[in-house]
Length: 441
Ligand code: EPU
Image (tube, rainbow, N blue to C red; front, top):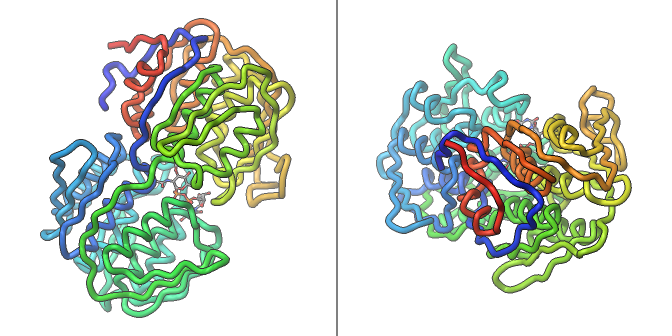
């Protein structure tokens, strides 16, 4: 969604109430689109959200000759019959700051014998490195060459199954292994795999295409390479991160939101924390209703972690609700080293939050003693006041929206276009939920 002016003025203090519907998970849909390259026949993907990350992948598929069409809302047809190499400049132009080009490498090496990725270094992606990805691809036999304009990869002898042990259960690196191993010659054993529901759904898709993938206990995944994969027909898993965001919005604004399409199984950990904070929820067959209890909220101590732990993408919206809880909450972020930048705006709005370099409230993590502000202490309850805020990133941005919606007075929130990277039609949803705001421009 192109948001004119990218700024909204929010008059806070009105509870969000009503029903919204989720579509497929951003963090699955974008990978499922890449998987279509591996098929000899076209694929169909349903429940695709209209978000800018999907548009980025669509553009990248387009420059690689994959025809993507849509004759129905939320349904993509992906035809990889004419996959071709793309110019680095075209890839660069479409990728923006997205990390998704790295996941094109395995499938393109199988189809074309070469792949290019733009220069992913530097501030464009913050400090999120791609070392695991490059190491994995090398292990399969890819030759990785750094060139002035980016990275070129080739597979002069084809790709061969291998044993991989990830130093950390990285979501992206696990997807890299899956998307590469399914067509590699022989068997691949992956240890230390990420097992997020989005990864399991990607495995469902690859199995539909003809792959042989066994998920064992203790984060071990075995893949037997096959000679041919066909297209798939699949309805994407719902977006758990969006569900958790609206749940936190219900709590922070003292509202009541039915999130259509949300399911219990994939949100178990979130629901436990939501309940401990004092939030109420009712689970139905077609979604989950999240609502404020009408009484004081409780503080919690949480640690973000890989699945089945509390997801890192859930903490930012929840922190806003925790500013309203009575007592001291602690959030220890163990997945990303720098994910508390968004709290500065909350403090400006009246929240009492301190960030610390120490590992607080849980086990010591790999960021301890390394000068990263990765623990937050939130003291409440505090009343937030309206402010002028510039949205920094996707999840931090959504939390700023919630903060402005729950604050007393008026806030001007700019750069909100970034939120449409991962939240479909969030402006229309805010309207549906009765938010009081004006879109500028
Ligand atoms: N890491 C490395 N080297 C690598 C790859 C990762 O050190 O080569 C580190 C990262 O720096 C990070 C940790 O490993 O500290 C975990 O990163 P991971 O690879 O698991 O994350 P990702 O695949 O880049 C996906 C989601 C994120 C989500 C994380 C964790 C997508 C497109 N993104 O990122 O979602 O937070 O997994 O679950 O799937 C979001 O939706 O806003 C978002 C950031």
